Length: 235
Length: 82
Image (cartoon, rainbow over the protein chains, first blue to last red):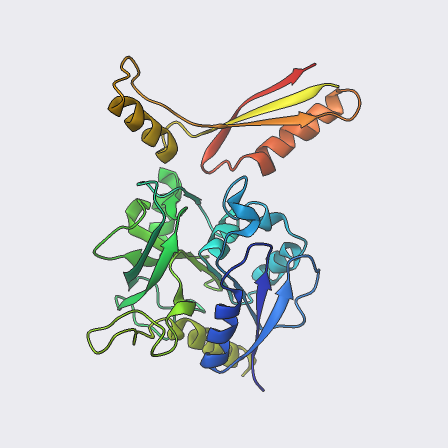
């Protein structure tokens, strides 16, 4: 049976359709979900997409984190469902306390958009198992509030427990502490990151590589990892 | 109608990129005498009725849970103004 992966649309979501497309290319069935519902429609995994929910008012992701459907999202997270938060979705996961720390305005105050090199620091999460630890990948990054921040105690804990999933390599684009680009929870089912894997899933539409222009598809492994974890769970 | 004012500031030990940008601008236009600028938020909650202890308790909880994020910000004041 084809896995069903839900993508929640919030007011101001931008990359929900891109996430749906990435899920389809990875071999699963995308299911559109709505922030105002209390219904996950029986999906097997979830993506909280990028964008600017509620115009980033209050704090990025803060108002979306109070949306009706987030009750079901928290419930699903506690039960081990694979949940990926991309950019604004990462900010929502942090605001919902499903991942530690916070995200603030980029240190240089400017919106940034670039093809970003990352190192996979934890390849044993639901969304990273098709990578190898230490592998370097390139996917697009585009954010204004991407500066990851946490107090010393939290930083020591996430490093000690291996919860840093991705780190920026070469350039730290937003002033994130310890070059942190993405995190996982202890269980490995909830992962959030600022860069956008869903924009690097099909040749012709991804980042440039040495081989050819826009041929980068490093983002696809996020989605195939999740599908593999679902097959493993149901077996 | 009373109003409850909630003030929220970025944590002192964390970088405040907005404040830093303003400090840089002051420096560029030749304003001296300040060692730094920090930017926070002021919330004005217009009260529908009277302010009592139960309402203040609600606001304190709201300030901690919604209006601020304790990871990056502190609630520095809750004040009732008429």
